[in-house]
Each structure stands twice: as C-alpha cells, then as structure tokens.
Image (cartoon, rainbow, N blue to C red; front, side, top):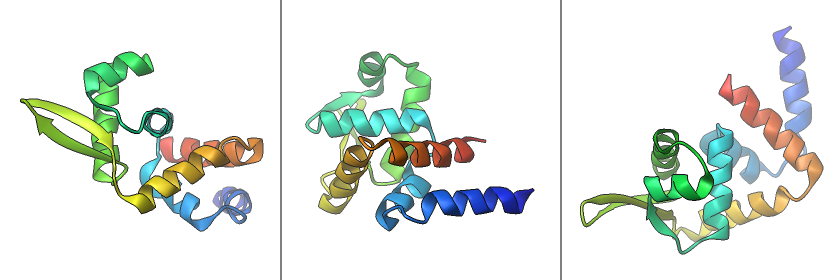
Length: 125
C-alpha cells in the first residue's frame, strides 16, 4: 500500500517547479504556515508580534507563535527582539522572496493548489 501512495505522490509532484517542491518540503508543513506565508507576502512590510498577527489571522496565538518561529527557522521570516518583544517580519532574502511570490502566484492555479494541499496534508499526518 505504501508504494501506491508513493506513486500518487510522485505523479502529483513530478511536474512541479523544483523550487516550489523544495519550499513545500522544507517550509510549509501546515495550513497555518500556508496562511502566514500568504499574509506576509500580501503585507511585506509588516513587523509585528505573534499576538497581533494571530488577531489579524483569526487564529490562536500559541499555534501562530510556534508556526512563526518555525518559519523564521526555515528562512521565510526574520524573528528579532524589539523593546523586549519578539517580532516577526518577512525575510529580506531576495531568493526566498522570489520563491514565496512564485508560490503565491502558483496558488491561483487550481491544479497547483490541489497538489500543494495534498503535499501539506501528507506532512501533517
């Protein structure tokens, strides 16, 4: 049965841009992270606390904070202390920003979204 799932997975990912596949594999292992990447892409100058980002995203602050920290560890965001508060902002790394932009644009395509969702859901198990 594992082989059947592996075959489906490879079929779904074979025609995906390798940069996007790597981004999905290394940075997006939850739907919360997907939402956060989209949020920061749409608000690239945002520098804010987990509490405020959670409020904007309509999510629990504890969940958001853990996901923000992991996104910072994977290079998508930058985490820093400002006036005793931990804040998050989108990376200034041009290559990462380009991949994020490509990911968000690719999400406009239904087929890509299905493939990406399949991948994220598999990683959430």
